Image 1 (cartoon, rainbow, N blue to C red):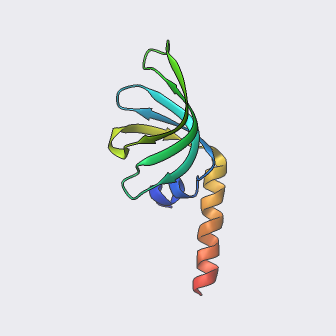
Image 2 (image 1 turned 90 degrees about the vertical axis):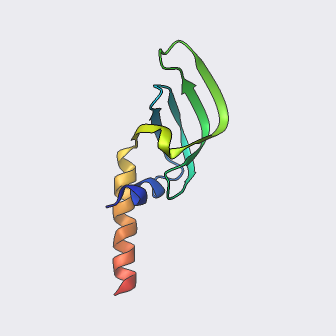
Amino acid sequence: MLPLSLLRSSTSLPMLVELKSGDTYNGRLVSCDAYMNLNLRDVVCTSRDGDKFWKLNECYIRGSSVKYLRLPEEAVDRVAEEEEKQWRGSG
């Protein structure tokens, strides 16, 4: 399982993104690209020190600024199902 396929299978799932700056973004993944740039919707942004919050309808996060991502376990199940479908379809 590749990280990008895991991320792509997480479309519409909630996720937490922490940036290298320390800010965090909680929202639902709309899309991502090969550079792991992310589009999120229904986002709550929290400042590094946790004293400021912003609610955003959507946001774009550059992949190079991401420190880590937290995905629900459902994402792992989804990518396993998608890989299984590809194996069945290619044989």
